[in-house]
Image (tube, rainbow, N blue to C red; front, side, top):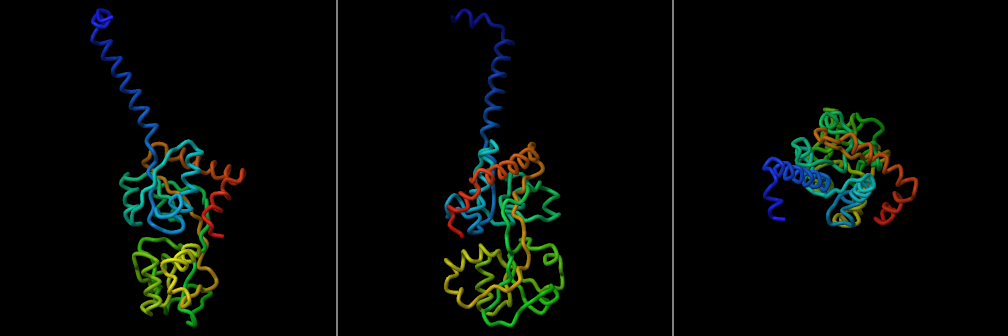
Length: 255
């Protein structure tokens, strides 16, 4: 047996080694999980919650069904956006549509819907029917979030950037701003936990500011980005058809 191996030409041995190396590389490429990223935005994305939050649970379940393993990473929102642009991450889990983001990422179909609400101090005589009704007020918004195209681009609105909704709610309760903005589920989640002491003094303003679809955003530079989006969209529809979608939502006990 030793003589047989010795008799093989160097070129044949080298070719065999290269072939095995290619197989190893291909196997590794298939095994590499997609890098999912989001900021802490309970109850949708939060590493302290069941399966990292409702949105993370839905997205990872759908991707698994489409044939993709994934891992969840949690960073501040601005870093998530920058990291996707710089190829540090593959998919932002919880993105609202904007043309700017579409320039560097591919959006899926919406897989959840967010009702965006204005919040005021209880008893404050603040109402609105049009955006210009809000011009006199100071409105706390989370830095780098997109809420609604008309709201986001209206330079006449007096918007105050903050780093989180918890900061916005505390500023509102203290009278440092007149309004705050947040998704209805997310605000309710915080009012039942970390902001419980503020809940009695704050209330939602009607009507909702907007309703936004929640999408995954896949970086355009990812070689199979389009296939991932197509597979994800198909998997979500299959999950809705067979009941898996509702099962995931129900286990997070938000309704």
